[in-house]
Image (cartoon, rainbow, N blue to C red; front, side, top):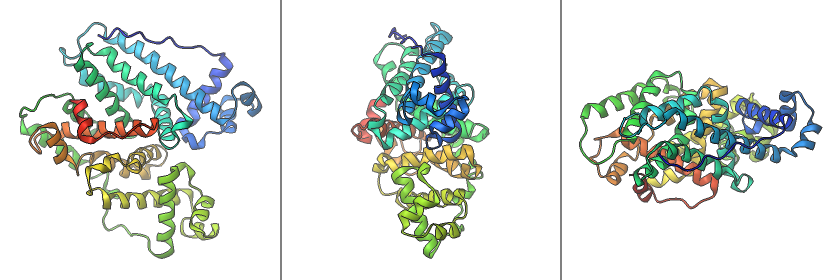
Length: 391
């Protein structure tokens, strides 16, 4: 296994660490948008003035939260390396189990960290300059897999692939942890990701994978309902403005006032059409979703569209607080690769429809790479070249 040293956890005064951990809990429950010095002060049973004195303003607190997540990821590296020991994870074929267990821990004991990491990645995807250290968190996550894999070119490739796959998959593993068909689909996808070569596989494997995709159409039905009433007139125009806000600023920026300002309408008019905050949120997501569904067939370049990447994660995070968003989260996860599978099969050098699980895994890893690209303000990779680095 890779002998790269594991960074030691830095220590902070207990009173500062308790505030930072309270901030992490607030973010996990309310999102970054719902975190303020006041909400954290209430959670930490302290005062706003004390937080300001010890840590600084809201931006400084978010930076402290990121630093804490980096420390926790370093601790996880040590724990997982000890757990695996000297076992060759490739020769023993336990790597798929490790990947799925890591994602399951994100829905269990690591839940707060997993949600916070996704929230921070989304924040950085809109404001990369605000969180330059986010790249260190990504690197720690990749190093965890590098620690467990043989120190070879193959090990380096798999560590990069798994880290990016998990970056996209984790949020769905949290919100859909109780969906048996999703969990089976994820297991199938992980095993597909770790298959190599261009040899033929048993067709029943792909049939099984696609049957799971089809089964998930049932809980995703609300997002697939072609008979749903599409807003018309003023309501439709306001919904499009809501969609613009989501695309440009994220769901956390939505309020009756911000929508009214964007639409050039009275707040009372917005409230007439969309009485509650949930009504605003749901209408905006539906509007963005309709846009994306109408554009998704355009080209594989859509995988490099930040709007798609951010929306899928924001929908999943929103579903943690409001089950009305679960159908959208399920639909967005189940149909990963549906419109580009033929291109990815070609890039992987495998017959079309021969291994849909592997293709789906590569699309998920590509989306994870896209979120990392947005968050670190890096150059967008060509999809064909990116797949080449994963295989």
